[in-house]
Image (cartoon, rainbow, N blue to C red):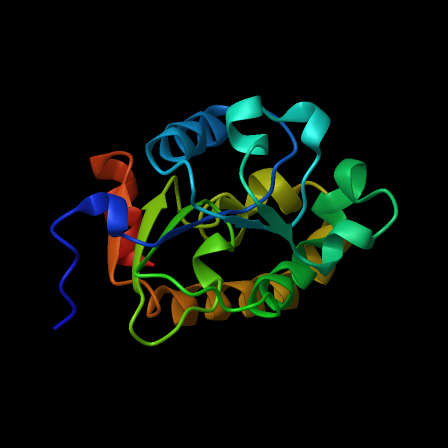
Length: 181
């Protein structure tokens, strides 16, 4: 069994967050973690430094290859099917502990076998599991095209959850969603 150092300052922590395009609730949580682990590198799909706080930006931030896609910051929602492959294609960080903050794919960051993974889950992918109609149901063509993509996302989401040692949910309601999905 892996034992954490008695002195937590010797704990090698890596952070992962879905994407960094603004300072909303998830980024406020990430900001607290960045302050708690000032030396922790941060992995994310893409990053807009002008929209993110200094306490996050001061970390070594490694974005995925999606960072190089023209217009990614404005049009990233259209590239959702590419997100699982992009996060899995990122370099595997050396760490004792990975803390992912996620509502999408950050929990899929590859880690070494010995690395413990704690996922602070804001919610499982809403658009894939529970709010299908709200995201895709009003347009029948969009809904038809989205169906196989969402099935693949649900399968990936379920499989990648096995890489997490412990989930922390933001509420009892989200905890139930995590358990159900």
